[in-house]
Figure 1 (cartoon, protein in one colour):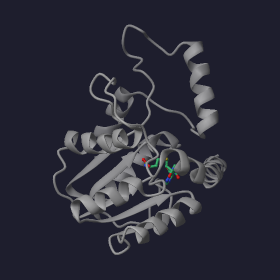
Figure 2 (cartoon, rainbow, N blue to C red; figure 1 turned 45 degrees about the vertical axis):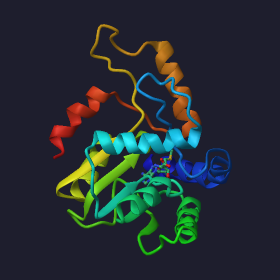
Figure 3 (cartoon, protein in one colour; figure 1 turned 120 degrees about the horizontal axis):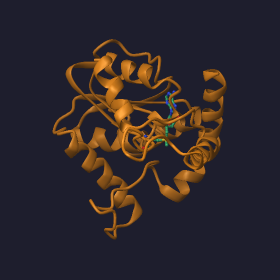
Figure 4 (spheres, protein in one colour; figure 1 turned 90 degrees about the vertical axis):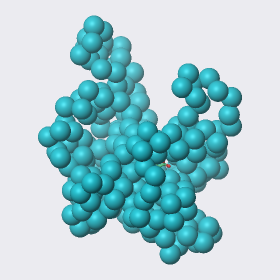
Length: 214
Ligand SMILES: C[S@@+](CC[C@H](N)C(=O)[O-])C[C@H]1O[C@@H](n2cnc3c(N)ncnc32)[C@H](O)[C@@H]1O
């Protein structure tokens, strides 16, 4: 099951990453357009602002070594390595992405600070407590086991380190709106199919998992 999903994800990013890069540039995630979402700002600046908002939200002011879990072509990895003068490693399921990210590190004179590997986020090749920041931006939605994903991210985090995760979620189902409607489920199925996602969960669902993995 996971093997088939991973093959789909790898093929999806191997084939589409050059196209994404030519349209979106190096960042493969959404942008930040102000609290109300209406600020006029170009796409790349908005993507960088999202990274900055995310860091500010997580109160991250210094980083020595980090891992970027689901790194794409290294947009965040290289940004964080340069910003903090940190060492970073990015992991992805796509060899095409890992190669392109490595090439980009060389182009930006960051190859002594950033490296990229093909590795599975649920079973990473890292030691316990290796990183002071685990960064994962719009990749958790691909994970077939959200609990194992959070457990692995936590395992490789130094005591006192930070895990920052931004991921696609569906709406909470514990409010007055109740369970997802058949129409909402159909819509989600379409998103899963197009983007090779096994399923997504809600923010309260993540909240319920989180205390049990640390
Ligand atoms: C939408 S891209 C986000 C890329 C990057 N975080 C960014 O913001 O530019 C999703 C990434 O998650 C990676 N990914 C998905 N499942 C993964 C897994 N099980 N292990 C490692 N990486 C995974 C994909 O290979 C891809 O690089």
